[in-house]
Length: 486
Image (cartoon, rainbow, N blue to C red):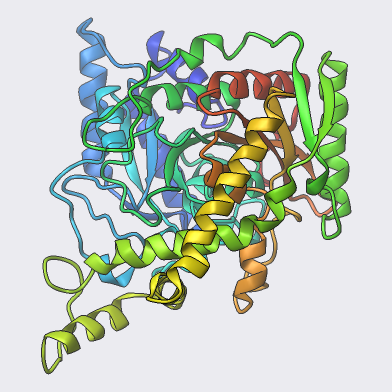
């Protein structure tokens, strides 16, 4: 059986040289999921029969000497807020519990065109609203490093599936840190591309001006390859940018000369865990040893990021989730007196507490008399936050910071304190407001054996710089080789 400790890039090399087969690799993934997922709960659904048939077909193509895609035979998991034709897409919500889309999301089409094998759909906070994957209507995902701790959110299932080596790669979505924070908590690489780099067609929207799809992998080179495959213009997404996609997988191994790493003083203030701060500062020493210049700078409007984000995201969620009304698809209440009662009963039964909280907050912010005071003002502050980053990237190539103020917190620790939960995204939210790319990679372990993540940010469409800078660090350290205890 092939070893799932190998990276996605290494597994593709093994597939290409005939050292293993896609069928054997997919079978190993399914067996690992079967053995481990009762404890981790990363997956909401798998389809063994279809994925093994897909793997077998790819093996036959390869054997016949036919051209195959860049991911030919590689098993991949997908966050369950991306549409998959003929397979449930639930958003971890009761309201979409039995929804089977008639089409594939743009990124799913690209994975299939690249001959990836889709093994299953992963758990998330309901409609991607959360930071711990405890808001799922169906199950709580546990951290493979310590099952008493959170995996982060909202893409917690995708991060856990890669961290536990159930699959070599996965996709998540990032609205305010939902790829980078769980990647940091689970000790894997997670990448949020520039807004518009990856198609959002078929991604069930939370906050349309913030959402972006990106990859999880065990190393930077594999993340670069996955990003290369899913990137590109899509005319079905009005926010998709028509811009050539660099060959990230071909340039990721090239070190950057004269690299300038920026450090924002606002990222090192009261509330930052001492072990996290020490690990991040040691990362700066690694970059210095590689010849990088460390540049101290300021992001003065970052203190407004949490308030700005939760006004914009909740307002957009209020609008986006209005479509789930029990009429065309999704859950419909069994008992109601009239049309309005059907709407309210269906939504009341179908949505969980956190989704209701954000819908109400957003509806209030958009209501007559409050739009200018809240939503419009938040949009103006968002522009100031973007200007801070524009100024910063005139002085540095990448910005480095913590992913979160602490390692993964205990399950249940923040679930009854929404404000504290929201504050766990304090380091990641600004990148979504500014639309810039960000990446999380492992940079340490806490004294209790939990991963610590380093966040790198770059200017818009500078994913290539971001990946090369991350790979420089990864090559000089061994944190990405650490795996959860057996």
